[in-house]
Image (cartoon, rainbow, N blue to C red; front, side):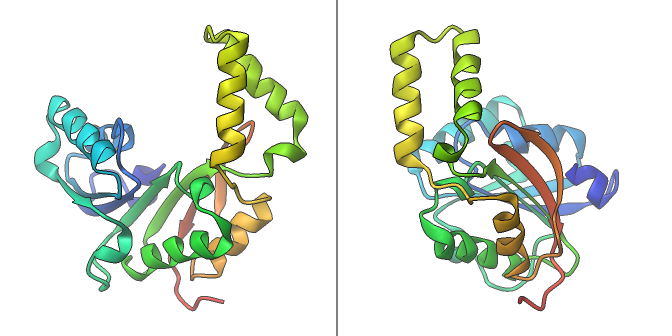
Amino acid sequence: MLSAALGEGTAARVLVVGAGGTAGEIIAAARLEPQWSFVAVDPSAPMLNLARDHLVRAEVSDRVETVLGTVSDLDRAPSFDAAIMIGVLHHLPGNDAKQDVLAQIAMRLYPDAPLIVAGNYRSYASQPLLMAAWAARWRMNGAGPEEVQAKMGKILQDAEPPRSEDEVISLLEGVGFNEPLRFFASLFWGAWLARHVGNAK
């Protein structure tokens, strides 16, 4: 989706927020667009080290600068053609923290730069059918009853997703992005593309 938004073969400097772990989004994007470079930010040293290992194995590490910290640790001037933030927003407590990280990203994007943001939305407790379907998905992948319960308990304790898609839209528009386009959804998960247009509401 980001490649389509920027244009195939376009050189771009891409900010990746919450980049620790498998670095799957960076590896996929780097293979698709050889002219892209990346700045990968994560506050967890173990997770960032894991990402570095994956990047080395994928032979794309020479195009990725890794930063231990948060977006606010980067230079404030606009210097990115695009940004990606996957699986972060629903872990931040309260809308102030969610809007702050989006504002920090917006500040560092060039005008009209696209942002891909993906994560869970809607209150988990408000959607028992989706929770049951989530549990069924884990069972399909071999999880037993105790593991399913443990996973469910962890989700309910460790995440605070935006309460609705309207709230996601409001958070983005409030810091200067246009109305986002949702291009993927599965159970609680959603993915949107928005462009930085400035003039936060």
